[in-house]
Length: 125
Image (cartoon, rainbow, N blue to C red; front, side):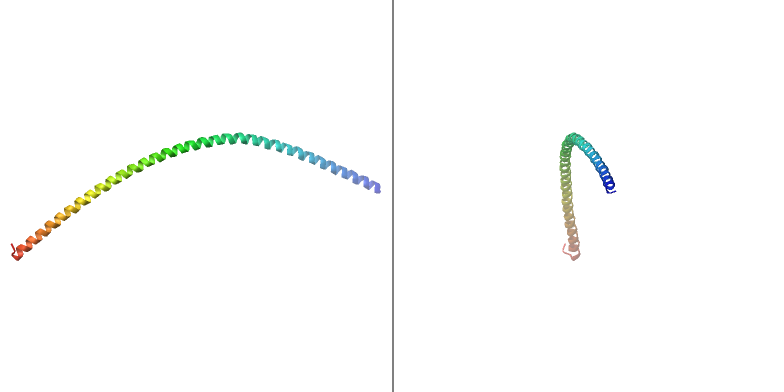
């Protein structure tokens, strides 16, 4: 009976080892497939990376050119606004100066009129 148990244990062990060997073979084939897939991905990614770099370079160049054009036009608009503001400020200054001068003239005339009325009232004239 011990011999039968030993034989059964050996057969069970052999079947388990055979099953493990079969599983290991499947794992190896799966790993080989995965390696192949990874190599294909690397190849496609390298090609994609090159085209992506070229596209990014093109976009960078066009964006830089567009930004330069915008910068130039913005500077021109700022200078135009500066010139028009300076002209408006000069015109306003001229009007204020003219207004102050006319106010002084009117004040002098009013003062002279008041003095004339006072002189006539006090009999100085």
